[in-house]
Length: 260
Picture 1 (cartoon, rainbow, N blue to C red):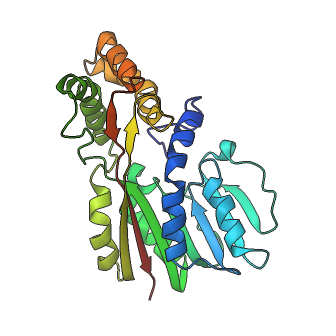
Picture 2 (picture 1 turned 90 degrees about the vertical axis):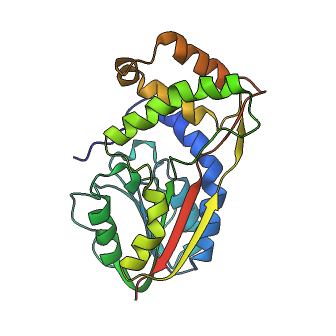
């Protein structure tokens, strides 16, 4: 089974999903722009907590269908709508679902997969001619602290965030994958490629900024092994609760293309 850096079995997953819900409206915009409509057949890859899959089900209506898959679907509620199906599935190694799709959506999935290029090819092959692929990823290497930020705040944040990024990259997370996606879509022959980017300013104490805490807490042991001290971690956690601190979210890059 494919191994992810952030294991869904961890109790902090719920905090992560709550923070990522801030990006649901941006995903709705990207999917609406892709043309999702009543009667469509959709595949939501890496369904997370099921929020996007449920929204898609509302858009396609009783005449459509939505398949939500995840390597660990424990956080996805039991489907309560006709045409909405949840299935355990490893997009890297398992056979593709039968049939072809009008729309395939993956948010913050391929960035974690060393075989992301091959997975992208698999997703394209599962589209109908004229089907739409929407892939959304964080640009992890985009600067987060505002230019006007308190220098002490910047130093405290970077003392943990910089080693975190190095750790993620050492585990083959695609920190710059989002920026390469538009050209990658074009190179694969996808047409009408559209790119949108969403970012927001997160304040200390907000639900969204807890994404950083959840990520760091889950990787605290390897960060300690990399030299991040308990005092440095404590200062970082305190900063995330300080309402005078602000940091940009990772930009979410939403890329849409159409199979010819």
